[in-house]
Length: 478
Image 1: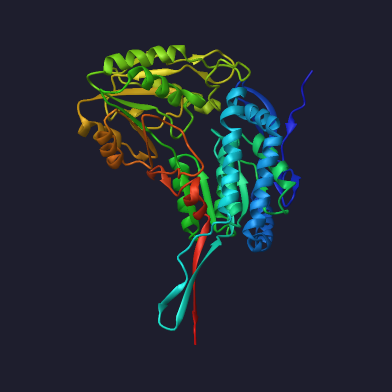
Image 2: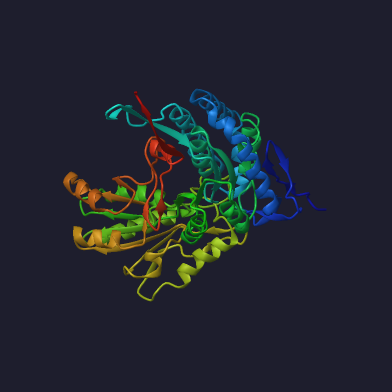
C-alpha cells in the first residue's frame, strides 16, 4: 500500500499551476528522510509567465496609495495569525523543526514584521522640498523599483519569505518569489493565503531548483533581484544581474564571533551562547558558532559549554523537550559531517561530533576546542549545530581573530566593562554587534552585513528603502 504524495504547485497570476512541462521534484521531510510531496521543477516558460503577470500587475499596484497597501498587508498579517496552525504544520514538514518553537519563535515575529512594513508603507521619507536654485523648486519622489525577483533559503522558509515580500509589497513593487527546492510547502501555503487578499499578479510563487532561480535573475523583466543564500549563489546572482544592471540585494551567510572576556558571568553566558549556537540546528547566518574566550577562563568556559551541549536535546518535531530538529537535507548532513571528519589533529571534540539516529538528518550538539585561526572550521560556515572555541590573550588579539574571516554579518561581546564593550562594538567589522546577548532581532532594526556576507538590509526602514528608488523633480517658478 502506497501513500499518495501531496502535489504542490506554482502560484502565477492568481491561480495554481503545475510546471508548464510537467516536471517535478520530490520533497523530503528531514525529520524522517521520507518523500511526502512533489513540487514543480519550473522552467523558462513558468518564469516567463510569472514575470509577465507581475509586470502587468505593477502599474496598478504602484499607483495604489500607501494607505491601501497598508490595509492589504495588515489583512495578510491577520490571515497568517488566523491560519497559524496550518503554516506551522507546513513549516514543520518542510524543515523538521520543533512544533512548539515554530509556534512561539516564528509566527509572532513574522506577523509583527508584516505589520511593521504595513506602517512603513505610509512613511515615504525624502528631503524636504525647497528652492535650492533661485527660481526653481525641487522635490524628491520615492518610488517602487518595479518587479522583484526574490529567492528565499531553506533554513527559515516562512520568515525569510516575509522579509522579502513584505517590504517589496509595502513599497509598491510586485513579486516573483522562489522558495528553496527542499522547502516549498509553507511558501505555497502563503501564496494561497496572500492570493485571497492581493490583486492577481502582485504576488507570485515559482518553485524549482537553482536553474529556476538563475532564470529568474537573468530574466529581463525584474528591476531587482534579492537572494538569501550561500556566498557562491550570491556571487552568481551579482554576476548575472550585472549583465543588465539590475539592482541586487544579498544576504549570504555569516561566521559570527562571540567574544567572551574574563569578567563575564560564565554560567549565564554559556546558557545563552549554547542556545544561540544550537537553535535551529545552527542553521542560522547569525548563529553563535565561533566563540573566542579570554585565556584566563578558557578551560572553565569550555567545560561548561561542553556540559551544556551534552544536555541539549535534538529530536522529532512533536517532542517539546528538544531545542532543535534535523539538518535540512542529506547534503547538509554530509557537509557538517565533513567538517568534523576533516578536523586537524590539534582540535579536540569536547561534545557531540556525530549523527543522531538512523532516520532523518539529526546531528548532535557539538563543541570543538583547540583550534587555530586558519583552520577550515574557523574560517568557513558550517551551518550546523557546531560551536568552535578559541582562546585570546588581550583585546587586540580578540579583535584580530574576530575580524579575521571573510564573513561580516553578526557578532557579540560579553563583558561587564562598558567602555570595553563600546570599543569592541566600534571596531568589530560586522553589520550587527550584540552586547551580553546574541541573536535577538526586531522589525525596527536593520539586519545585513559586510564583506562576503553581502549587502543591503532586511527589516527596518532601511530594508524598506532598499525596495525604493529616488527621483528628483525640479520645476520653474516662473
